[in-house]
Length: 381
Image 1 (cartoon, rainbow, N blue to C red):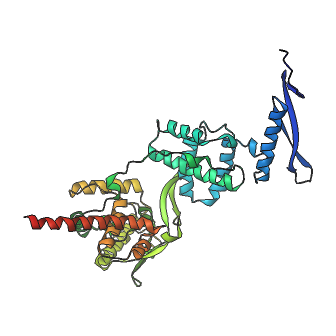
Image 2 (image 1 turned 180 degrees about the vertical axis):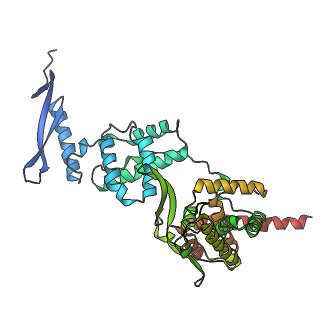
Image 3 (image 1 turned 45 degrees about the vertical axis):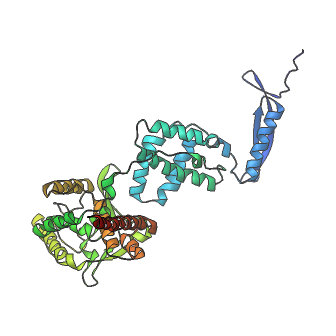
């Protein structure tokens, strides 16, 4: 059989191809944007052209097929994401980007070539050196990126929609409310040594750790009987300098006023006097803008140091080690047990979604129902 030579019209490095051309749009000056498509045959080249032009008609940007993941992600990260988030959020994302995304196997792939299988393989490889929680953090960042790409008509579909994420084991103590006996011990410690009042304050205000550490004396309004929550603080390395960064809360619901519980009003006033005396001893000028729960040098306290102090205190007074999140969780649990309406509790907690509060309320309801059922055992005694 005589082999019929393929019809080609273009040669590169000794290899013959078929080339077709199409007009994909116009430049700002009105001149046409010409695109070339290559194939080993006329049919293959024309198929590539037709697919490309069909995607342009669907709304994809011209040259969408040339965008590489690494280049596109970096541009989006700095020009789109960075201006839209707080500095602390950006720094958290930057770590994931720099350590786990920038040089990943997705870097040199074209965006239009990335499929769920590629991302799944990438996540699976991450699990060899990262925790499931970290993989989920990376996924959250990539989800924002690909969501933007769909909206910007760079890709038609988000490849992450078909990706399975690793399960994260939840540590029981993170969301564990303190028992009444432990609450009493922490309260007794504060009454005996006002330096430890911050833990009692956390339990009976429900503020987040960063919100507590950002409070100033001006935020305490005894006339109105409220705590004004309008900022959060976190230590970050910015331009090579490790320093406290104060930001507005990440959601509008976090900006709120929380009533001062009458039972701790006296302790709060005593603690504020203690802070004024500390400023005087340190030779640091005091004002209403001074940090409420300040460090030994009258500056913002660092969260890791505060947690270590809490762990040491728990050990000394013989209670289960706890966290600031658990102290906040304790506040919400107390509200549930006292019958405070769910919506009110959600507002006091500053939750972005009432369903977050509802999960705590449901847990309390389940526990109370279990206790109720256990009481029936008295009939068998």
